[in-house]
Image 1 (cartoon, rainbow, N blue to C red):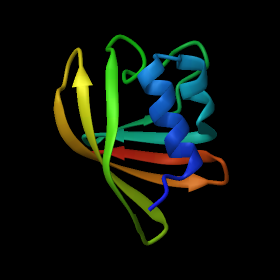
Image 2 (image 1 turned 135 degrees about the horizontal axis):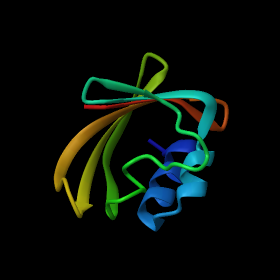
Image 3 (image 1 turned 120 degrees about the vertical axis):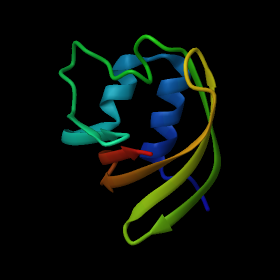
Length: 102
């Protein structure tokens, strides 16, 4: 499966440590659920943790479309968590409306 453009931009911005590009991947009312903690989209002056204080290298292992969302199995290397996990993206046009990290 081809990676949808908003997810590709999310990965690229995270890997580049580009907070502005990272924030631009989300809709204005997007939400993030990280291990059960639901956070609204951050204001423009504050980046979310994946781009903020920890350097990350994300690599898509596999991706599947499931009932209108995209389940992405990610390999992570960097300062902090190292390993694999799942992210579920709901897209709205060219942006991410919801991201669940489990």
